[in-house]
Length: 78
Image 1 (cartoon, rainbow, N blue to C red):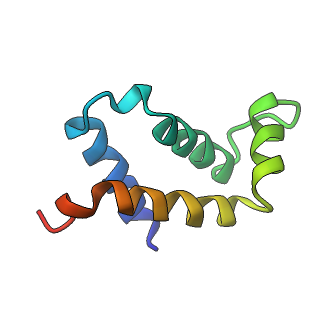
Image 2: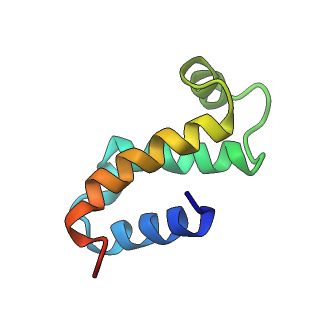
């Protein structure tokens, strides 16, 4: 997975996927990207939740990338 591919995929989904911002997967992806970039404060409930689900930001990115690929499957070649 390339970080740029993930950003492009989330950008594409935000433009063309119905109800992008109400989709829990996309909200989770936004939070994971913030965690990966170190933008979440240490006492954040979001950070605690993400740490309870994933061992590291890298593991979280890999998991969310697989889900996004499934969501984009038919459109990825376009």
